[in-house]
Length: 189
Length: 265
Image (cartoon, rainbow over all chains, first blue to last red; front, top):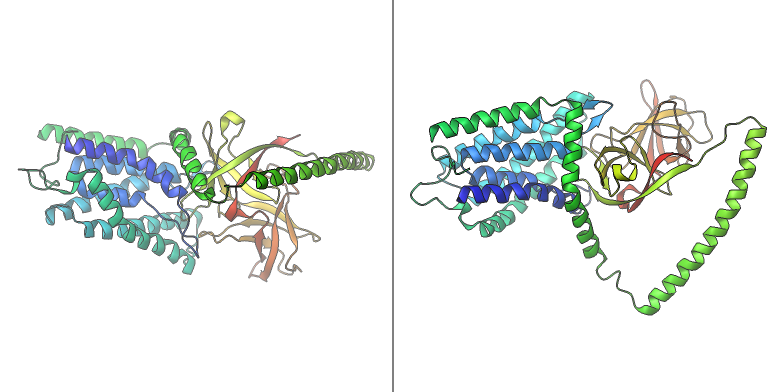
């Protein structure tokens, strides 16, 4: 029941995070954007047991993929394959981390959010380079990856606090079952 | 319990393969449905943001409101008078063009729209507007302001549409430079900085800062001719061609109201 409730809350928050990040003002002077979706994903990947976390990763990939989908002249620039592989891969890593460290910690969530945001933006950039040709890495491109990632690192603890207070048991061990992760995959779903 | 885990994993893999294998058509429809799902949230978010943003600035006294009303009324009358004068001029112009055998220059059919937000994306430069297929909007329609070209529509749902801005690398516009025979193709950078790059110009082009650039309106293209695209900031010759850096005509950073061009009148 706990896992189901947390899963549903996170699922509802996915489209809301897209809308909220669209409304947030850009960070001056380079007008970089703040991305909330990777931070929310990290929370789900660390707090949920393996199977629900994988389904949550798939949902995140669909939301992210459809939000970014660009169809130009009948060609898809960035489809759903990339986001699906990306978020499922990170979920497996986070689940192993959560298992190894016996649970979720806010530090892992913060650094995880940084890494996911950075690799997400870098991955998108690489795919665009392959599709459009050229590899125009300059100062602006590095800023576009570094600033939102740093913002994620700073915002993640706030979101962790918010979600922990919203779902108090999300970051606590399940009584008598140890921490969520490999081995007790919370199949209340 | 183990069987349930295996069944869940099989279901997950099947779903992942299903979504990965979707083609352009189904993906486009899925995106439209997704935009439709986001639409009420985006509309509410936009209203909340505007309400917060206008707190303090929109609070006026009755005297201020009265004077604002008087000013707008006077401006409305002035614009009506100018419009009437321009209509006569347009008729004269069309008549003279027909006498000289020129094609009549048609004005556009426009649908006004409000910008709901600038999408939070790193490598794409897009906005969302509050008009969709219910209002007659379709993909690949030009979007303009009174100052010039903004971009073109891409994904469209019932009451929301995404517009890719001219500063996006994907939004390519054929353009010509005022007062010259120079024609080129403009696009933004991969990490958009708010400027346009007008490429494929002659290496020996004599362009000066401040020169206006307009859409060329190539046949089969999306953008009609004669819409202001930007002004030349600088020009440099490259190995094979010349490239001008343009300042967009429309202020893309502070877009509030735009018009979607749905056709010619």
